[in-house]
Length: 363
Image 1 (cartoon, one colour):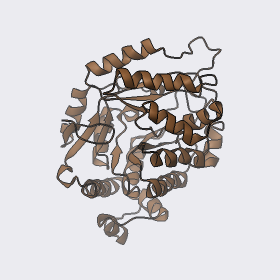
Image 2 (cartoon, one colour):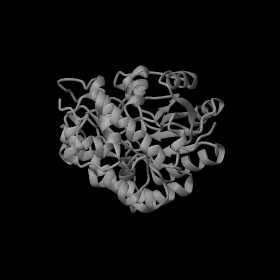
Image 3 (cartoon, helix red, strand yellow):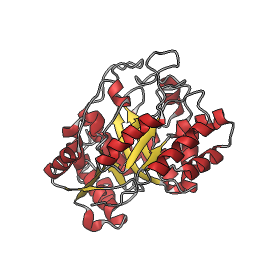
């Protein structure tokens, strides 16, 4: 490893300067503890830049629920253990009654949002989605619908035979409040061709985000790493996110996690460990100087590592996540309630506060 403690690069980071891809690669090779300290400094800088300087000691979280409206998907990603075909006995599409039960439980728990995603169902049509959004918005107006990843939107435009912008506008008018960053994986097409050849390419993923931001919908940005990509690929992914944010400015947060290989077709030689996860999150915090919020990923890494990640650039503990189906299908199952999350945040030396999708404090 290359020490960076007394380098010019360190001084530039501590003064808030933007770093290059080459400098990011240099940082990646630095000692983990030093990288974490630099990420923590960037976290404080980000809070001040967002006008939250007095709140640097706050770590936020949200009470929401993952709802996968269908598990039918025709893109067959090699890293996914969740998808089914219509021929599989356990395939499903949620009814409004099933959805209402989930939303009633969320409301009772003080929830403010659903993360709603599904597979690329080849037969569900435009009116089905509009009815779904209007139903939720009319019956549960206090719940933000954070839904439909960029690959889903590209799929919708193809199936509905509609321009992408018209689809996004119609979904927003029907009740969609924001868009998750799912399906990003690694925004390098050579990698995407190996792990999800039928899913939209990098430019198409970014196109959805560009249009969504232009139409007034904020979104998150994500990265799933630790499969077939190189470190250089990861940095290129971060570069594309940062460039997109410079243009459209609609990313509210960044979340990264490691590939969970159990029960998937995609096999790897070695699973990315805790140190690698912390290293990439810290590097992302430093590199993504225009995205204010970074979530720790306790859902994949576990609560204890999620807590440690708060010292590696994260200012958010993510979601209570009353329900999770995709990651758990790959063999990773962690569960936390609001009290658990607040205890973990306090244990790391921060003040826990609930938020909404736009990182406005609720309590």
